[in-house]
Image (cartoon, rainbow, N blue to C red):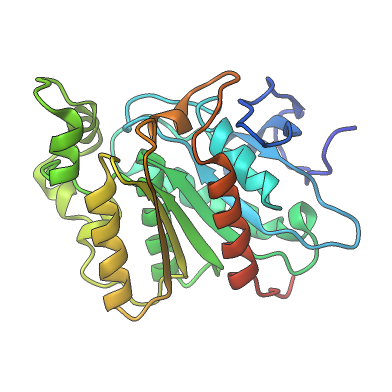
Length: 293
């Protein structure tokens, strides 16, 4: 039986390839589909979970990682599956691997579509969240800023896992992670994402540089202690807190595979799977508030 997802002027849904199964996480039910976010603009998505009769689930718009240059729905399976196992219905987005602003605009279009169909996805009064890992964490943060600036749609929270937020790629944690390597995928990723120096000043391209953070939803930030994005992610958490916003942060220790394991495809053991799942569950419980449909 396929999940009860809302109809749209999209291609028929079809079963997706089996997602990566993180250690301790039950196999996900997911389907691939294409949704129309604007006239003539279709976006491929993968949907995890299903609406449960008599129960309201959080609905999460999710963005995979890949340093802005690579990655697809398969690379997002681990995090999307963990979000589903924590009780959410997840819409994972195959955003275009193109320069700013197209990936952000596409993400915002999907967010509006999800909000419109939230009752059919998660049940009456379902709350909507954004989530992303690595480059996807940047997009989630950017789309949250867009939603705030447009005063629509309302968000219950944003979940950022090792988000790429600093185009200068000069933090101590990133330098330590790259060591003596002459190549840096994150440097190349930023170079591909930002078309010109002016883009680096735009808050939707570099959310960590936004001058105004007030009005953003509650935030959960997860990083590893040896994570290349450790310093920039926690610096963003501190700025959000300084703006008076509720922030939950958690640092996973002794997990050198983080965050790369989050992007792997195929069956593998994801470090901190159980811990991340519990962080998601607690965040949903603390932030969910029914929204009139």
